[in-house]
Amino acid sequence: MTLTKKSEGIYTDDSKIQILNKIDAIIFDCDGVLIDITKSYDLAIIQTTQYVLENLAK
Image 1 (cartoon, one colour):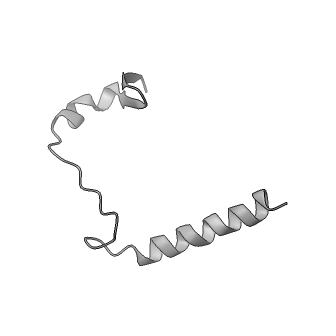
Image 2 (tube, rainbow, N blue to C red):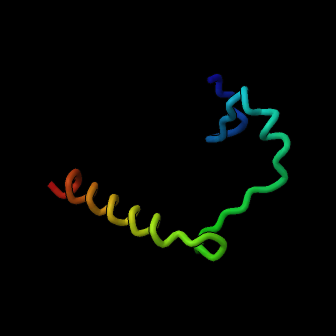
């Protein structure tokens, strides 16, 4: 994989550039209205809490 820096903090995989050029838009479902994220959200909270308690709260 070869990455090219497009701007500050933005890199692209050169092998995927043709696919990226075909994309017209990206939709971010930040509030879970379009897709039910209940299970993944709950899992993320559990894993984050577990990490904090195991690694940062020593």
